[in-house]
Structure formats: structure tokens, C-alpha cells
Image (tube, each protein chain N blue to C red):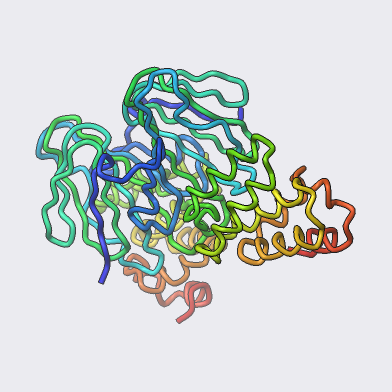
Amino acid sequence: MSRYTVKHIGDIERRDSWIPIREDLDIGAFGVNAYRTEEAGAQVISNHTELMAKHEELYVVLEGHASFTVDGEEVDAPAGTLVFVGDPESHRGATAHEPGTTVFAVGAQPGAAYEVSPWEESWRESGEAMKLYREQRYAEAAAILRDAIERYPNSAGLYYNLACFESMAGEDAATVVGHLAQAIELYPSFRDYARQDSDFDPVTDDPAFKALIEEAA
Amino acid sequence: MTFQVAQLQEIEEIDDGRCPFRPVRHHLGISAFGVNSWTGRDAGDRIINEHDEDEANGEEELYVVTVGHATFELDGDRVDAPTGTLVFCEPGVKRTAFAEEAGTTILAFGAVKGAAYQPFGWEVWMPANRFYLEKDWEGAIAAAKPGIEAHPEYAGPLYNLACVESLAGHGDDAIGHLRQAVEKASLFRDMAREDSDFDPIRDDPRFVELVGA
């Protein structure tokens, strides 16, 4: 029996500014979220690249008025504007000019079947840990993720970030490599990503690390 | 240029003889998922053609009512859909939608679950479709050619061109274009086997060789 689901965007439970549409509707073929802020001047799409997921992204301003910045170029984006960023390396983000500005974001990787983000289910813990990470409190950030892994034992993103935080916290290379290996097993794209992730600089000369990231994908 | 910006309402509509639509994916050069938009001029207009995606490569589809107020019919159920409504359909759900207000606009996103998205380029075919629906095969061939010449990368329009050439009695052209379509996307081999548009050339040994018995 085929399934259909109808939901008003306002009825999806929000996670701060994030409206997790893909997860709520259980869409499996592409990624889709919306972001909403009640505050003029606030960031509605955080500044980021798509180097990890390699997604093409299409943003649609559904409501309000936003201003995008893509690779340093500013784009005025009232409701009805489409902004398509095809290059995963492009830096993109948007701020809201009006309260209630809502931006829809759809993404997928060209030439590959869609995979759910390795952080989606553990978004709350990942967010808390990232905050500590940005404050360079690496050991505390790692502790949050170790705890979260008990609840989400198959969350690739948790293992990956744990490996990063442990590396930055100065833990022994074997521990770091062990967690990175688990992340790669669950989500093979992490191998490529780890090669260019400066969080692993402290273990970059470790033979086991080298062997892990140089294995043929 | 690493990014593209457009106003939805400024993308030129394509009238394929059914509900006119704006080819958003094609306009922006998106290659990882499909996206089009439909706008009803008047209340009561059908804005999503009835279809069910019930084929081997049926897509998951997400519809978003961005302007106005629509009514969907999903497997026979009527569903009220004001601005901001999301309608998600797995393949197999029979779906259509009507505008309750003039200017009602629906954005539709689609891709096949578990498979890389392949843009077939149906948008490029659409100027020819009204001729196809009217069974004006020569008109369809003439209308399709400029788009196909501008976008030789797409398999979909080549397949449809082969269909109308077959129907128009141009067997050699049909075989040639069907071969190009199949080389770009092998699923057209299976489609051609079942497609009655190819009945006029079904016994041609080249057709049999190309698609199998």
C-alpha cells in the first residue's frame, strides 16, 4: 500500500530554527528542510559548505525576505526567490530581513542515491557538542558524544565527531582511529572527508590513521 | 558562476497541452533532483496532472503549496491544502490538484529513492507534446527538434522523438533516435518494448535487435 502524508509546515515540530521536513515526512529520495526565524537580522541559513555531503542545494524563500551571501556575493531574496548552489565548495548562508522569514532547502548529491545525514537523529547532542568544540572544550565535547553513542549506536556522525574531538583533546591515536574506523564503516564518505579535516592533524603521522584513510574507497 | 538566482514567477512557463508548468530544474541546471512549479490562472484550474508514478522508476514526490490555496485528490481522498501545506507521496499514490484561488502555485520536488537522480530532460520535449496529444506527428517532430539540438545530453526527448517518428512512418529516423536514447539510459529499452508507439516498427529486425523480442 502506497503512503501519502499531508502536513502544514507550521505543524512540524521545530528544533530551534530548523523545521525537519524530511524526517517528519519520512522522505527517502532527497533531503529537505526549512528554516524559520522570528527575528529580523538573524541568520536563517547558517554559513556552510556542502563539502561533506557533496549536495547540490536549492533554497526557496517561502515567506518573508532574506539576503543570501554566496562566495562573498550578496543576493537579495524576497519571497519567491530561488537560489541554487551547485558547487559543494561554495560558502553560502542567509540572514532574515523580516520576522517569520522561512527558507526551504532541498539537497541531494548528483550521480548518487540519497543518504540521510549521518547527524540527523542525534541532532541535539551533536549541536551541544559542537558548541563546546567551538569553545575548544574538546574533552567535554567528546564526553557528550560518548554518552549519545549509547543511545544512537549506529549514528555515523557521532563516531566521526567523537574521533575529531578526541584527536583535538590529545587522546591516543588508537582511540581516535578506532572511532574514525567505525564512522567510515557506517558512512564511507567520511574517509574522503577525514583526509582534509585538520582536526586529525595531531594523529596524521600515525601509521594506523594513514592506513585507514588511504584505503581504497 | 557558482550559483544561480531566479524569481519563480519569472521562469518562462511551458505549455505542453496539459497544465502549464515552470521547468525550475532545467532552468537552474539542477542535476541531483527534479523540481517544477505549476500555477493555476483561475480558481478551479487543475494544477497537477493526474498521475501515480506507478512505474519501475516511480519517484517519491513532495508538493509544497507556496501561494494561494489548493485542493489535492490523493487516491480519491480530497485534501484541503492552504499555503504552506506539504504533500508527500510515495510512488503509486494517484494524485492531482486543483487551484481554489487564482494564482495558486505548487512547487513539486521528486527523485527515485535508492537511486541516483537522472535528468531525462522531459522539459525539452514539452513544446512538442501538444502536437503529440493532437496526433500531429510531423508537427511534434518539427517542434521537438530545436530543443533536442540545443540539449543533446538528454535521453527523454530523443525517446519521444523516436516515438513520433515511428508513428509518422519514419522508421529509419525512429530507430536512430531510439538507439541514442537507449545508449544514454538503458531503461528506455524496457519502455520501448512495451510502448505501442513503436508498433509500426516492431517487426523491424533493427528494432528487435535494439530492444529485444
